[in-house]
Length: 218
Image 1 (cartoon, helix red, strand yellow):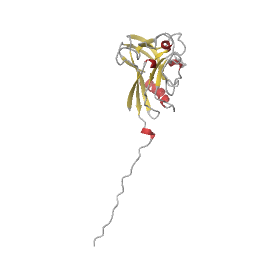
Image 2 (cartoon, helix red, strand yellow):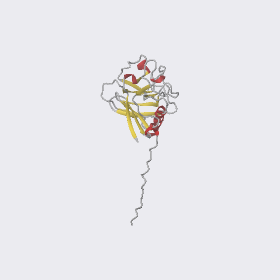
Image 3 (cartoon, helix red, strand yellow):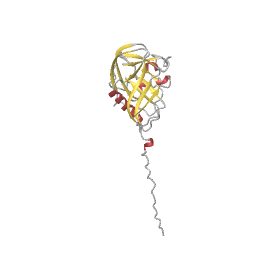
Image 4 (cartoon, one colour):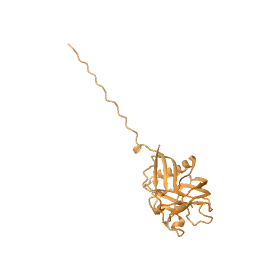
């Protein structure tokens, strides 16, 4: 078993449709995570993109969590619905293509109601239970298994592409890549079992044969 952590690489790799289409600047230092609003704009959802992913379909992903840094202290019941964006090589988000406009792994959505006092400047990992971490892992595995996977993947919470996304105003604020604090960027923590290198079985070598000779004495 091994673990690897990927970090959001830039400002265009975390955000919501509000940020990219007029609500907030895409350089905002925080974003809402949770229900997107009673009447959200089209293509809503909270997205986080990670690059330089070296995992492949040969690896077996067993658990996944997203690590977020709290911005302000809040205690609400917040509905999370985490899954992966189902693309070969997810491009940076933009006004024409925000997180909620992308196809998702709809068969593997980690749905969780979180009711905890989340404290400012503290790191939290979601989902919080082992079973949902496995569900999230299945979503990531689906992307890694794509024949054209190119090393950039993204996850999304409460995507517009999620038929069961929950509308409402229960949401919390978390730091983005643009936050001023050190090590506040969103991260993806992946636990996995490495696949065999190249998918080949190790070569077994036979021990050298011993050659015996008889010596005749006069």
